[in-house]
Image (cartoon, rainbow, N blue to C red; front, side, top):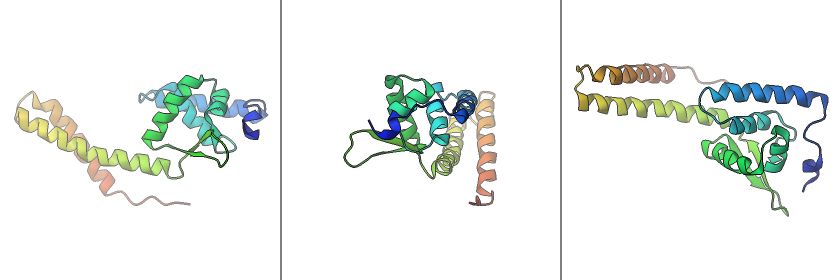
Length: 160
């Protein structure tokens, strides 16, 4: 166990406020179907110090079991939010929020808008574009077409 992992996860005055914020983030992300543990892991990794933490340390901080940590951290890595590394001479895996996580995740979501628009267009071709059954699919296609245009015409993000 590294020196950082031996420090108590909770105890400093600001930890309670940080964990309250992590819970607020988890509740927000849960509305979009993100599991509470994955959301807490992400939230903790966004505010923790040091920014790289072992699964054991994250689990201690957010009150999650080792088993749930493995599954949810693997999910966050697959989604592109979190990266991993092993320090020289250690076997412990450390996790951190990827430096470009939000930019990369949003770009993937924007790209998926066009893919969904095409999928909806295929559905309309199967149903016939002017049928009653196609109306729900047409609404989805039109919405995603509009969103694609908005993002295509958006100014580039400014970085500080």
